[in-house]
Amino acid sequence: YDAVVIATHPDQALRLLADPTDAERTTLGAFTYSRNPTLLHTDTTLLPRSRGARASWNYLMPSCAADADRVTVSYDMNRLQRLDAPETFVVTLNGSDRVDPDSVRARMVYEHPVYTPESVSAQARLPALSGPVTAYAGAYHGWGFHEDGCR
Image 1 (cartoon, one colour):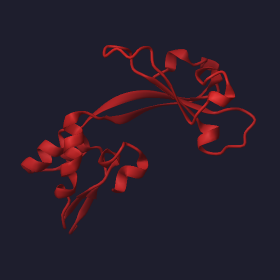
Image 2 (tube, rainbow, N blue to C red):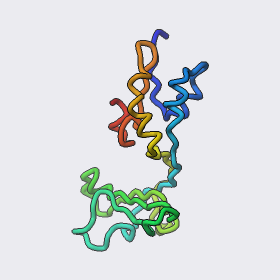
Image 3 (cartoon, rainbow, N blue to C red):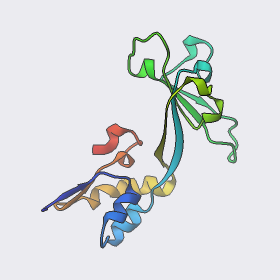
Image 4 (cartoon, one colour):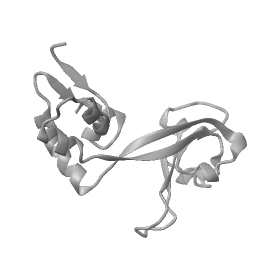
């Protein structure tokens, strides 16, 4: 091939490179990821009780302390995807122990970028890595959303 687009997590991209440059090593190596157990379910107890208080993304934080457990995030998929369904579909990250097991439709594990001063600084250097032969793409170029993959 004459050129390649590497559209993977940066740690995976580094493992694909036979001889990474110093810039590739330091820039791509600045990103870390968190593993998030994820459930698709119909248990609405993870959403605010009041329908008026519900959002597309609903956060549950045990505390604001630095050593607190991980935040639990529940996405109201009916709202996000404009689903007109008789039941409410919810995707919850990091809350497996809070979800009624009988409501679970699917289980998956996702990895999300962890934003640190080092990784945010590395984001500014990402455009310089791409050239006429190798280009990098991925959600880590932005806020971690799929849409950020081609910045």
